[in-house]
Length: 103
Image (cartoon, rainbow, N blue to C red; front, side, top):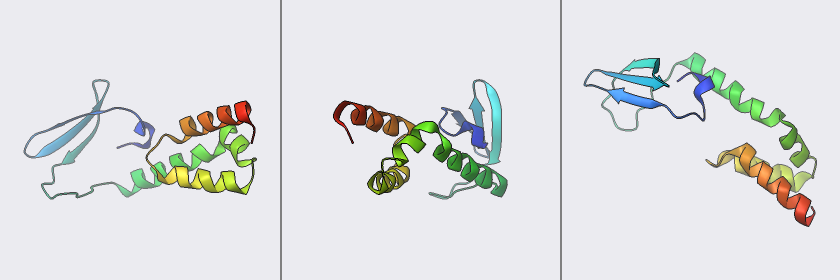
């Protein structure tokens, strides 16, 4: 999938030979269908672009404010990044808790 679709809901339709992905009624990707279990089919340029997109999460003002709390906050942020939770939403909640209860 194109990196700009990360975090968005897509519709996937498949027949016996092809798999087609749609975003708001627009076809965004078509691939040959693979019948192997847990087989990942991806284009190298999409993977590189997704990694660049992931790095951009670290440049928001909220992330910078959270990192400024010190080394424990940075370690917890690195751990949050490995989970499947939305990073910015989690940081926003933690900053709200910090404002209410202190560092």
